[in-house]
Length: 274
Ligand code: NAD
Image 1 (tube, protein in one colour):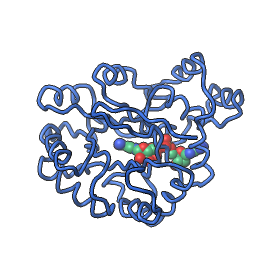
Image 2 (cartoon, rainbow, N blue to C red):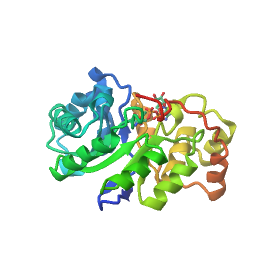
Image 3 (tube, protein in one colour):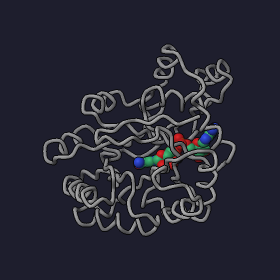
Image 4 (cartoon, rainbow, N blue to C red):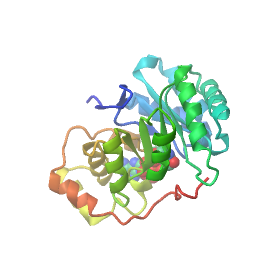
């Protein structure tokens, strides 16, 4: 079944479901990305920090899939803030990926204590003008960081990629994104599998639909218009996580999942990390 797309504020369309490669070992990345491409994934989410862009590039090259059928995202590492560094780091990513452009380039973390994310964003604008990144966005930005970009630069981020799962439902950011036409990318969409998928509310919905709890949670993201890229090393789960377009949750199901919110993060606090 075809993966739907989300139209971004720059007019480009991103596949709503992708494959994330955080914590996939560099030496195994090409094999795991191949498994995902074989299932039908056409959107891969990597980062300089993951150390596995070369593996992603190898899988792309070996696949023979036309470049314009793929959506490749990478992210600027934390020690690469600054206008010029942001561009030169992307050039290094492109070499590792074996590509002449990425579809989406993100500032991985805002690092507000360093306070360079505005000039770094100008570097991403330069990269976009040079055709090296077709779309540009941010990750782990809080509302005050997004406000600074809106006040001091001329390009709104196409997306903000943030931790988002049933334990952290990001109501305020979601509203802000909606009001400012910023796409919401949900990282750790199934909470890294830790202590979430066995919640009775989710296992009951899984039974109701004859699906796994992971599929129910991923479907919830899809119906919230989030962009998601679950990670797995396991070929069966890679396939399972792709099979979420032939059932729908009701409004009540969606509301029940939102009630699982605790505010607990699986990752670091964006205001202090990096
Ligand atoms: P995730 O929520 O995708 O969970 C992945 C883990 O869940 C797997 O390691 C596995 O243990 C388990 N799992 C996967 N499929 C399952 C299934 N069908 N049933 C049961 N368990 C299953 O977590 P993630 O990898 O942290 O996040 C996904 C992607 O988001 C990453 O690969 C990366 O691309 C991105 N990410 C971005 C940031 C950021 O700062 N921008 C941070 C973390 C992750």
